[in-house]
Amino acid sequence: MGTFTEDDIEDIKDIEMQDEARRGSRVGGPLQGSTLPTGGSASMMSVGKQMELEASNSIKYRSCSWQKTAALLFSEYICLAIMSFPYSYSVLGLVPGLICTVAVAGVVLYTSLITWQFCLRHPEVRDVCDLGQMLFWNSKWVWWATAVMFILNNTFIQALHVLTGAKYINTMSDNTSGICTVGFSAVMMIVSWLASLPRTFETLSKLGTISAFATFISVILAAIFAGIEAHPLDYTPDSTATVPLTGLPGGPPLVLVLPAAGTGFVAGLNAFLNISYTFIGQITLPSFIAEMREPKDFPKALWAVTIAEVILFSLVGGAVYAYTGTNYNTAPAFGSLGNPVFKKVAFSFMIPTLIFLGVLYASVSARFVFFRLFEGTRHKGNHTVVGWASWAGILLVLWILAFIIAEIIPFFSDLLSLMSSLFDSFFGFIFWGVAYMRMRHADYGPGWITARGLRSMTGFVVNLLLILFGLFFLTGGTYASVESIVMGYSTTGFGGPFSCASNGL
Image (cartoon, rainbow, N blue to C red; front, top):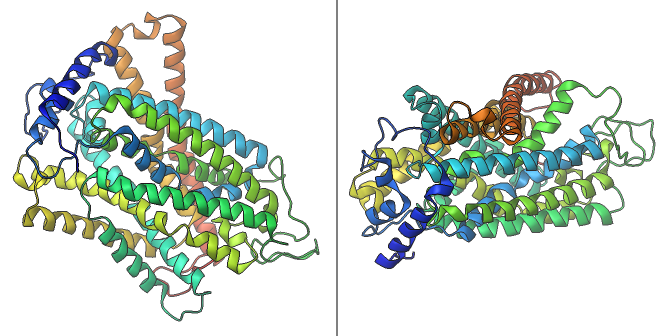
């Protein structure tokens, strides 16, 4: 791990002074009830000051370059959820699906830049919970409410990866291992817990690079295999027959430019939520920025990831859908590949991200708890028995909770949608619309809506729409997700809780 010289720290302080005007005004005073060791003035917790405080520690958290932060972002966004895009396109139609992909990416890029600007103004913010408290007028109850959503969101994502880890093992064994799926989930939980033990994002970024690269290979192989194989899984040339995989009529793969007539609200919104979930990851951004040596460089990482993901998601989603069609498509799309060798090879390259993405969110949650327990003590920044035992114990509790959730909700697509509607409404839209308004009010006063003419009024309207869309996401999205889950159970489309039944592709 790198160390900082006095000249490095002084350079960062100079940069902070030069950027003070560009950062703009704070939206409020220091966090109330904060466990930060310096308390008092917010300026005391500048990036340079934080680096000074941990200069003598053996574990340094403010150590990520923008390249390493980009690796974390790539590993977060280039993930298994890409393989739900063909399913979403099969419901929405190819053209609306591609439009949604670009539109959601643009909104997430915009709101992520707002997140970054807010963190620049308030460098003492360590995670989205601190940000939420400061955003809503230093209200401690907002901190607690955000903390509950934060932990639940991250634990749900961990649960998803426990579930898909068991799905992978069942798929590789052709669903004939004779071992209970709950056991496979337990194995995935233990492996993920061990992989979660590194304590800094700098270390995790190395694993993240491997994860993102392996995922890229996996989805490219899936697209190639879908194109070169003779037929998708369960192919039947008889258009009057029913495809066992989807329950739809057979015949050649049916590619829809627009949604099929009669597509319902629940199906359409769930398909849109699957796309949204893959892009919306702002919940982790304050945690990443809090460990960057130079937070001003964060947009470099953000732009690189956004451009790459739009290209990759659109090409892979569109190509796989074109060859599997609506009538042979499932999520994740590996299950649509008719050649079992192709399916296993492509899915196997997904192993690193099946482990790492859950690990990343577990680490974000664990540092939220760990920092508040040990802030100001030697256990936070040094190798002590108490520090490491506590870190490992917090992670173990989080993974056990994830295991329980994975077994209670044993399905893939609807779990994505439920998570997205419950939590991404706030962390993807509402928070950042409010953040924009608070920052503009701090910069221009009560008349900020008209202070810069059309620019100010446009900004107000756009961010008001963000807030309203977030509320729709919360209400309509949750309704659609719950309805889809109920329908799945009523048609015995899911296994039961803690089921031994195979969930392989």
